[in-house]
Every structure is written in C-alpha cells, then in structure tokens.
Image 1 (tube, rainbow, N blue to C red):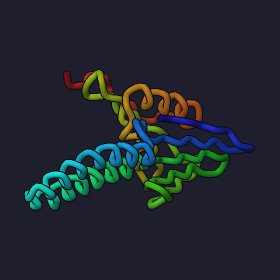
Image 2 (spheres, rainbow, N blue to C red):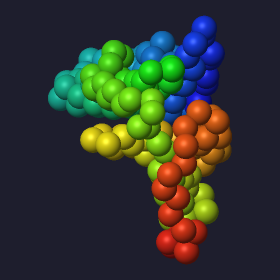
Image 3 (tube, rainbow, N blue to C red):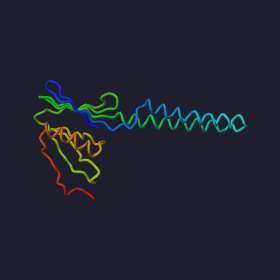
Image 4 (tube, rainbow, N blue to C red):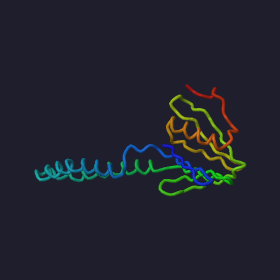
Length: 167
C-alpha cells in the first residue's frame, strides 16, 4: 500500500505491505481455535489420555508464534521524505532502523523492469554514494503507483531496457 501526503515544502510517501488482518483480529482467531482445541484436550485428559495436553499447547503456541511473526513482517515500511534540500528514506518495522540521506540535487531514480508480468519494477533511489532499493515488497499495482509518485519528484537517470524481462 502506498500513501502520500504533502506538507508545507515536503512530500512524504509511505510504502508498506498490504495487511490482510490486524494483530487484534489474529488474537481473536487464535482464541477461537484455542477454545475447542483445549476443550477437546481437557476432555481426553479426563478420560486418561493426558499426554495430549502438551501437544495441544505446543500446537497453539506454534500457531500464535507464526501469526505474530507474519504480523511483525507486515509492519515493515519505507518512509520517503522529499524536501527541497534532501531525500530521506527510513526503513524499519515499528520505528526507523535504517536512515538514508541523499542530497536532492544528486538524487535520481533507477527503474529496472519486472522479470515477470505479475511483478512490479525494481525502484532504486540513488545519489553519488548511496543506492537504496525502495518498495521491493510491493505488488505490481502499488509499485507502479510508487513509481508514478517518484517520477514527479525525481529524475529518472537509469532505465533498463524491457528486453531484460524474463518470461
């Protein structure tokens, strides 16, 4: 998902993966699965099959861990701030973990076409010293909308030929 907002003299673009569900909804699904699973496990343990309890608990813990991991991965985002002097690119999950600064007069966009028609193009913002890939986790439509936003603000200095596409 790509969203943008223009503030006084800057443009802020936020690129993040599509979220299919919130963490709260994932917790509710886990609870809905846990109630019958633990109910059946308790029923069988009362009948003498007590070893089923640790397996039911391990199954729910693994499912909860997997749901948390997927939710954590979907919190990743790129925040691109373009102002008159510089281009700032922040990458991170809940807070910026990596920050790139490129002078605005040296910043340019490199576009590498997709290898397959379902993929989006690879977008790289570069300066003299840094090359930063942005939006590599986006689907095709979102990558094309990010490309349209960046094309309005940055020069496209490198565009690979379409013949590099692999079908």
